[in-house]
Amino acid sequence: MSRLQPDAQLDDQGGLRHLLTLDGLPAALMREILDTAEALAAATGGKVKKLPVLRGRTVVNLFFEPSTRTRTSFELAASRLSAEVVNFDVPNSSTIKGESVLDTLRTLEAMHCDIFVVRHRENGTPEHLARHTSPGVSVINAGDGNNAHPTQGLLDVYTLRRHKGADFSQLAVLIVGDIRHSRVARSDMHALLALGVGELRICGPAALLPEDADPRVKVCHEFDRALRDVDAVIMLRIQRERMEQAMVPGERDYAAAFGLDEARLCHAKPDAIVMHPGPMNRGVEIESSVADGPRSVILEQVSNGLVVRMAVMAKLAGSAFGARNKGDGGD
Ligand code: CP
Image 1 (spheres, rainbow, N blue to C red):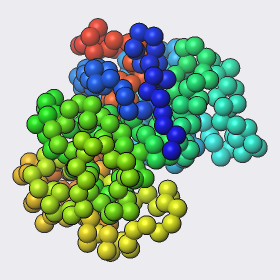
Image 2: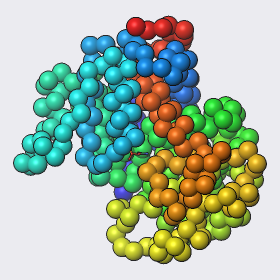
Image 3: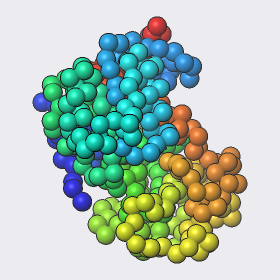
Image 4: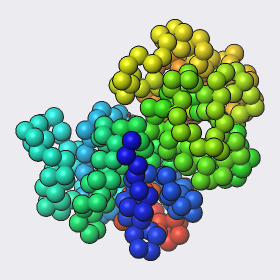
C-alpha cells in the first residue's frame, strides 16, 4: 500500500495546505478544525445560512467512486461557505476517453478552480494530485482505496467529543468489522490515537484485521468481550468491493459473530454511543433496533459531517473562523 506523506499536506508555517490523511496530522491542527466546526455550528444554528468564507472560490467534487454522504455534504458545505460548486460528472467526462486524472485536474485548474475534493479507488491518488497543483490550489481526500478518509475521521471524533467531552484519555472506543479494508477505520485510529484516546480496541474476523496494527491498539477476536465497558462502538461495513477473494463467512454467520444487536450492546457502558460511517448493511453488521435506537448517533454523524467539512475548507482558505468570526452571522 502506498503511504501518504503527512508533510505533503502542510505549508511552510505548518498550516493546512491540503487534507490528505490524518496520519501524522498534528493533534493541535485537528483540534483547531474541531473548534472551527463548533464555531460554524454555533454561527449557523443548524440552519441553512450562507457565510462569506469561500466567496469568489470554486470547489470541484471529483468523485471516481460512488458516494452519498461525503459528496453531498461537501457540496452543501461549499455552498454554505458561498463557494461556486462543480460536481464533476465522471461517467460523461473525457476520463472515459482515456484522459488521466492529473490532466483532468490541470484542465479544471485552468478554469480557475480552487479546491478539489477527490475520491478514488486507488490509494494515493489525492496525494499524487496534490503534488502537482498550482500554488493556492488545494486537494481534499474524500476517500482513497483502503487508505484514508480524513474528513470521516474528523467528523467521527467531532461526534465523540460532542457526546463524551474533549478529554479523550477517559474513553474506551471499539471499532468492529472489516478493519483491513476500511479507510474509515484507519483515519479513525489515527485521529483517536493523536487525540490521546484512553483505550482503542479493534475486533473482527482474523482475515479482516490489519497485519500491521499500531502497538497502542488492542486487537480482540471475541465481540462480547471487546464490547465490555466501552464508551463508543464504531461498526463498519464489510467492503466486498475491496476484497480479492472470499475472506469472510456468509452474512448469517458474520452477523452471529460480529453483528451488533441490543443484547450485545448491554456489554458496553450504559451510556455508550453507537456509530457507523454508512452505508449500513442492516441485519449484517448492525440490527435496525440498534441503528435506529436511542444510543445510535449515526444520523448525527451525517449532520456533523457538514460543519466539519465546512471547517476543513475554511482552514484551507486561511480563514481563522473560530477565533475571528465567533458570533458572526454571515450573510
Ligand atoms: N461514509 C461515507 O464515506 O459514505 P459515502 O460513501 O456515502 O460518502
